[in-house]
Image (cartoon, rainbow, N blue to C red; front, top):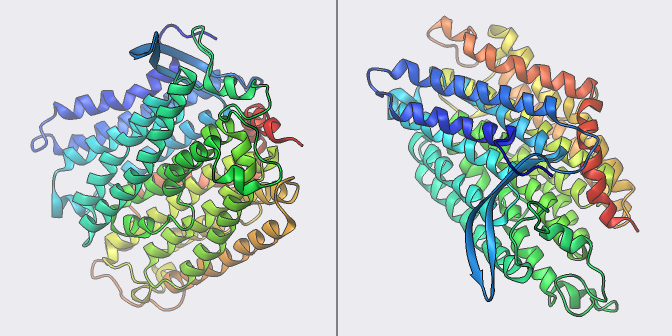
Length: 534
């Protein structure tokens, strides 16, 4: 594995920081119009760099590619030292999520063009600086393979999102921002404790081998002996509870899981999400749904499954059950909402319940479907939040009762909204279907889950159609409830069309030709699934 030289991964990772540096030196008053173009151009160049990474990516190997590793610090540990390294690289799972991140960001920035929030709150320069910082941190989460540096990037994502909600959010923005920050910070502390234990036990924070060091994942997966790598004694075969609630591996598993479960969020750790979504500006909601939530599911796949396979097997039915509860609960609560943005927010709880179910099916089909559904959800739900944001810019309300008949006056917008809604509910031929279908296929063939998981999970597909069609009917069908005073408001602006075109392309491409994305995932997913073959 090449660990020297400037890698494509590093270039892509730090391009947003270049844009941030340029923004820092710009005058926010005299160059106000140029701020958005610098941010947009930076995000577009970063996306192009990620596409170059994809072109150079070899899907035939599960090893990390485009790797760079440099020692950042040394921590004394008795007679030896633990290296903390800047260690970046991508496999198929990372590559797909880096592409999602760089794809969503320019769309989110386009959604900010002409927004009323700058007239009300100002600080446009700071807004785009936070977006650049957020993109850098999100890419870092997906490409870093040192646990300490991963934790740094993980925590950095909280800061820009906290300010995006707290400064440019809606009426209750301070409450939502503080709740978001405290929830995610609380879970992160547990993960930090688990990370420190892992490093102290293994003598390294690197998850994979590099520069002559053996990574923690290889240590765990090549371990031979009576017990698991983390426990001196084997789990008590006669008492699962004895392993769940007293083994070191189980507690480490939970330390990571709670942090990731809050970020997903897995029921019942979800209560911060609707407040954050409803209060966030449009770009914040698009990024939160499109990328930030996927950091949790990615973390489960990357760390929980690889580092703690025995605990994963023991906890799989419980976590999958919570995923199924989230599927049904999220859909049921979505249907009950009168606030259109809150409806879309709760739909994320339901859709990401599918991802959790696919992950803990612990087979290749489930993991492939879960990873692909992470991307599908980011595109479809990000598109839904764009729709809500554009409606709010014109009508200044989030209540469905205040809408109606919009398709009559905005037929193109109505058609776009229908396609994105059908995508979110999993219509065959669109991107949402193939992810949910593969997850249910994996759940049905799982060695660890019963048929009931698949049965009740399937209900979520039906319920998604119910609440999304309800939303579409109330907002777009019928008679026009509140005509706009300015008829120019019915026209789609160029930047709105530019934001929707790539979303529509991806919805149809991933729905019609998913093999392109499955090929990227196959080898990386198979290596993880092999840990759980019975």
